[in-house]
Image 1 (cartoon, rainbow, N blue to C red):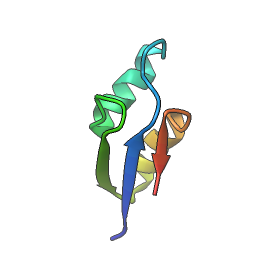
Image 2: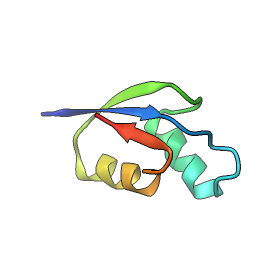
Image 3: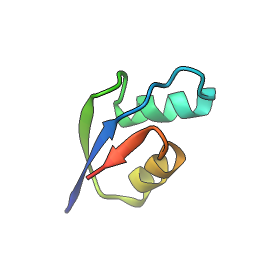
Image 4: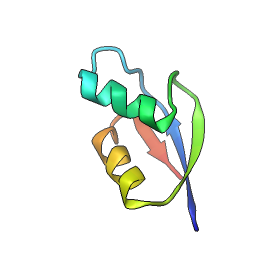
Length: 57
């Protein structure tokens, strides 16, 4: 299965609580951190909710 590299590029300060919880669920706590997840519809949906805070490779 393909993997996605997700990097947090913007700060979570000032974001709604749901977006902060989504970043936590992805495993992103600080700006500049990168995580890898399998390419599933659930992960794609989470990335879509916080697309303005992350970059995907």
